[in-house]
Image 1 (cartoon, helix red, strand yellow):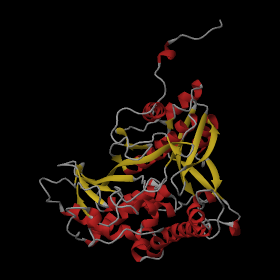
Image 2 (cartoon, helix red, strand yellow):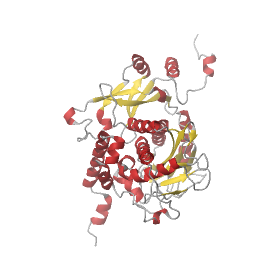
Image 3 (cartoon, one colour):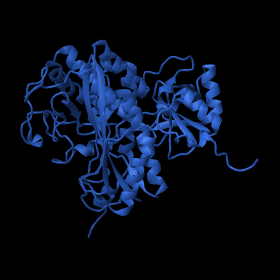
Length: 456
């Protein structure tokens, strides 16, 4: 008999969020999922990979094989995906060989805004199956393992800013900070984004518009650090997808316009035996672990800057005082001008690390912060006094790095960076920073043309 089947199966809820392997097999059998996107986060934190036929993906994981391969340059390139020389991982001298992609089945999820499509994060491996230490997910796992050896679990909540544009102009022309009424194009975008993210397994804590024209802030709830970063990559993919469907553009530049900064703030705490070790009982009396962590962040992060400020543009976010982007390496209680902010109350006391910009790769920014915390804990460092006033007038604190060239000089070959990350990792990301610096040095900018042409 023809016609639509109206049995009990039609009453099942639509697929949403994270899937088990059994969930995926059932969805593929029903025809609900026909494509699986297999993705490796690249050096910029973007998801790179392939679209596989869903049944072929299931066959590959059943056989225990890599689910796919990709040219190794996806982990040794720039923003424009140009093949570059200088990396040990790959290059013209090695023919730009393949790397393997091993699916992390704990990350399987559907994307409701892309019907019929599931997504899975993969770990990059050498052809012989050995791990790639320079891969962002691996770098974060390494730091999580170091803290686990010290007896700590890490929980992270990310706070993301971006600017939504129509062409290259913001969709809103005015300061809409904390506004609850928005121009139609922005309101439509936010509503659809808020619907899409939970369905993709990315819970949202809050959405708000920010102080700069067209600027949006999305905050995510606390959770395990690797899951937070995986979710963030899906979030960025979803933002760009939702914007593109409306003829809009979302920019995650750290400084998209002169005087405008977009951040990726890291809310971070350590836990032990399912209890928060940063919990502060009263006032400004901080537990020793929290004090060591603050000191480690202030000591080590200046030497790890290319991991959380990877582009020349990253440093323009720090250039304007009273912009809510830090200019000095200081810390304070509930002070948004500081590089490190102690915030929350009681069991909710935690650190907010305000140095990373919106262009930061979350895996690398969190890995750098955890490496700094390990440094503070193992060396039992003591922080300076907190900043109690205007953080931008704190001339006793060291200055945040002024540009990528300065950051690179302190990173490449640094003993602390090498000890924390490994010489292979430091050199890999130093090469990337060198390439970005060289590219920007050779470019003639609009500002130079504007100021350099002869005037009457």
